[in-house]
Image (tube, protein in one colour):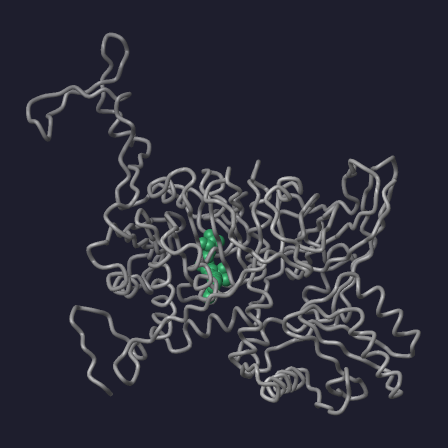
Length: 623
Ligand SMILES: C[S@@+](CC[C@H](N)C(=O)[O-])C[C@H]1O[C@@H](n2cnc3c(N)ncnc32)[C@H](O)[C@@H]1O
């Protein structure tokens, strides 16, 4: 191994340096974001600063809005791995984020697991980790502390570049890793930029411990980007012992005579002139989230809003940009929203992202926000890295062949050659695989069904990443008429995770579908009634969940309607969802009145208890 030139004290772990003594580069991949949903914004506002219409299922985020709400800023909830997400944010947000709080997984599997409830009864089930969450966990802890430090230090290096000159980073950790993370923070941000080590003492039930004091605090490490960082002194109520030292004067004001610690001599202090007890680095006045309390959103690692409120108030001002790249149930985003900050949040988990969306929607007057991911760009990136990328035709064809062969293998099918639209065979069924970068279309399936019929094949399985709207209804029936049984299966994101794929962790679920009725009761006024929601092949659903589902609507956690879908982003016009308190879900929405008669496309979106989206478009003529 080459000599490593260490010039200052630093923490070293196996794998930190390459064989040649250089430091591993942090991947800085810049991929475009896709806007998958816009929430709480009227179509009119949106049209006013409209992006060019994309003829796909999504808008591409162009980052053209300004840095204030008045200039069109929309808060952002991003679903994806924070390494790719932060890398992709750098182009627009390098040096722009004023406060970052992160609460990375510590060392317990509980970081990813959560409970979810089913239907009106609210029966609880523990949601197992998805393969992708398990993989993130294995990546984090697979080589013990060394891989954990690789994970944290690469994220902190990206965070350093995103932080504004007035910015501050808060890293929440506990006794398992605080000693290590502090070493990494010293290196990435420099010891001169250390601000605080906060002990958050969460009181609560204590057990007698055999050989140590009960561990009852977390550590929050605070570093600044520069010494110009934003700082607002925080106060808490005075302790009763302090107040007891004051006496009433003739007018009833509470006062106390004291020595002046700076100027010397005596001075009189009035209690109403003291803003409160200055908060120091030991925080012992904030309880943990009560598992039974209203604030609880089903995450075992959820942090209390009061804790984050103190952090946001101390280190940012209204209108500043606050981010959390391990946002879990969205505590930081909810508090930032309530305090008038702009925010960006990111989480890898499908369910975490969904819970956060519901949590934000529950905030009165929540400002417009958008839900984004890297979608097809992340898949294209994966395809290029995994199978090669080339403008040269034979090489490009070879890469495509390898992509198809890989998906077929995961699906347990054999490749077939010489056919135009069919790529493989599994048992008696022919298989068609959709492209990484485009939704599977009706005409694509039609061609594959025709080819099957010509070859006298009676079953077709189509595997796709995304789907053209309304395709299920049309295609399943149409293919039956041509003598071909059609199965539509989703290629899951886990396919892109090498270890998950190698372990055989990949499951292909059938596309769910919904039935709805569009009702026009009065002039220009329309309602949507959900009539059915079907997850085919329920045998793939764990028994524990299936046994608790009493009716089809129990599978639905959330549904919403876009009254005027423009074939770009889903714009939520009406929404209903279950909360821990209110388990009922209306199956008919409130009436919507259009301004003028005409043809409209209504998009209905259902999110099921697994966090999967199913959408269906309805073309209506409103009179
Ligand atoms: C300790 S929890 C955060 C809890 C959060 N502070 C709250 O109040 O709900 C850690 C979160 O990090 C997410 N996570 C872990 N690795 C990630 C990655 N590579 N990219 C994005 N999110 C990740 C997990 O899905 C989990 O939700």
